Image (cartoon, rainbow, N blue to C red; front, side):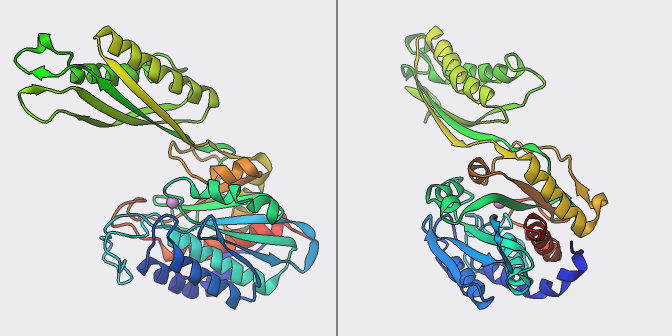
Length: 387
Ligand code: NI
């Protein structure tokens, strides 16, 4: 059990790493320079078991404790930036136009590096720590590929933990909850095929725009009229494309959208009913539809034991008054869900203070959070792998 004061002297160095990573953001799986930077730092800490090139550019580095009998726990940080033009006006702004670390993954990497440096020096635990650096969180599939590449079995990982900063929570505070922490994510596409013609003679056409409009309104009733009000489902139509001229009724209209929920039964329901409703409405107007549905990320479920451990580690660091253990889950998605499907564990939010929101061009990770994130990881390891 260590308080946050023990990690203050790592703040300036971790801040330097973070600002370096911030200057040179890379996207999705193409995080080659980022991976090289991390590998070099990890070996400079005396860590010699480092595997690179997992899921293209991911890294797993293993630190053995003084006691070697215990299990291995995995700690995960994400590596990728976003295709956003930075507007933070910070001296360490992105040097690459149109790319920036707008989700704080630079800070996540720096905090895990800080913990790695501390743990490689102290090794005051019984078992091993697998530091997992994962590419392509933003496209939602990097975590899945790390699991498919066999990291859980190959490194004998028995529990896995993740952390993400959250603007709006004060620096020095943590928040989590047991059970669902982030929603499942699915996407759908609907093409409405009507019959085009002259806009002055609508009776000679099957207007796909009117059909699409009915479908959009109809889909809203799947949540408001067909879902138990105490359960959560989001269906948002986020794209609508049709037509090219004022006086032409087009042949087709295209819709697309996203579905979020915490319940497998609602996920199945939405997939089935979006198609059935769109089909039925189109048929009533004499139009046809093409329907495509893709399941992307699963619900991210915090396991009971892992959540308790995460809460204890945070409380030991900052005191229970700064740890919200009953956070409202988010309808956003997170690809750490794949790791929590493969192994038990938990995901926690760390306060980033009153900064711009995630994915905003003015966002910047708050370096004041550094000792808290580092200290959380160290406490988690020393408590999970206590002698
Ligand atoms: Ni993120």
